[in-house]
Image (cartoon, rainbow over all chains, first blue to last red; front, top):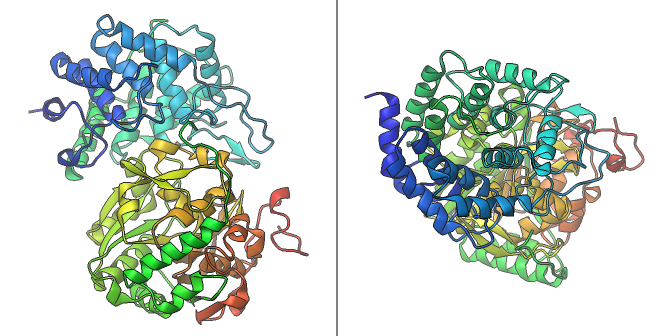
Length: 285
Length: 344
């Protein structure tokens, strides 16, 4: 049995899953379930994926959003991933939940700030983790991916989000949670947000060269030691720009085996399977 | 934040909260009656802080830590069967700057002490800037501590949480969503790194408690807290948490542009005590910073514990001969941390 078959069997047994290291302890949460749903669908396991998609439908509120887990309706950043899950399973069957979620997403934006302490353009707005706060890289990337995937690529909100993501890339490439230079000091990049940003920016060009430098950073950063979530997002970002490393499968297998030794987190298995599915063409644009 | 309604700050609640917290500690038999009186600031304003110099990560730190905690009022016999959370600092780790995060040897040593005293020990953290907690554990080296010490880890960023009323009242948040592990333990041991902080001057055991707040509900960074004021939320979180004590990793420290980008500074110290505000005030003095100029300590002084040196009894070694000024960023909001002196 290949590692992918093993991983698919584990995820198919529990497509509604949580963040915990051990599947036995798992408490269903929106992000892991949405990722599991997308991964199963991308590997053709639609019957099991539909279980995840239906669980997400039950979690959706009339306003269109989903909270972080059942009983925790706030904050609502995982709504982006639910959109992607429904789209991946059956865009027509889930057209109504997708539309409600997308309209809700378009109604929310990060706070625009006046600050002399940070060098990024704090007047640009995309999506915050929590409504009422500033826009940060990962929620902005996730909503950008979701809205590009559902026909909103040319929407003004998405265009501004793309500009924000490029603005938040560090001068030498890569990004972190979303600050670039603070009090005159250039900050460090991290793999996971850099990979996620590259996926969101697939097909985009940056005349200042920060996108190619970020791809270089990711190529250099990934190794057999890279932890599961960071590795998966890095590979998704690289593949979106046709720069997946030739040893992608070996890297994923190493991470999968390490994850099993550490309890077998289904959240991480979902991410590794998603990365193993190859280039994720998110946009119709 | 939608579920964080405005409310009127009330300092009256502090005294009650302090009493409740102290009541909990003494009821559990964790600290001495002397410490109980210390937290009732207005009546008995004293606290003890223990300092040990000449420490190294390959020393027998457990012996020093056990001795120091007992010297500041902790009662080991009250810890048997209690659940104790060790909270290291892993805000944004990188192997390139291990002086940013609590050293694994300190985590293992504190775990050894509390296990020896019969407590059930859990390590937990909610890194503030990175979502991949496994990466944070690897980069900080804490994963080695967990393996070596056969310790369980609670990923506080993603756990289901419980709402706890804001007992501080300095910010506008009605309460905090604490992870179940945090809300359910008998005692929290804050294990910060001794560092400068480019927004609030100094970070030690009280600021380290930002890492008890789950990112899944507050974001990465925990921008909800920033929007409500860093000093105010540091104070309020500490006022609202279960009982907390502190062991500060002051061996390899960070100065300059802390808490992430600063440079390494060797101090060789362990600083600890059962009243985090008093511990942090002493840490400030060791760095040659005036504690009353640190906004969250100013809020805490007289409410969560003493910060005035006249009311802090030194155990172990006195702080005065150990002072070594930490460099501080030359920015307007940090310029008066050392009154009458130019910072560099």
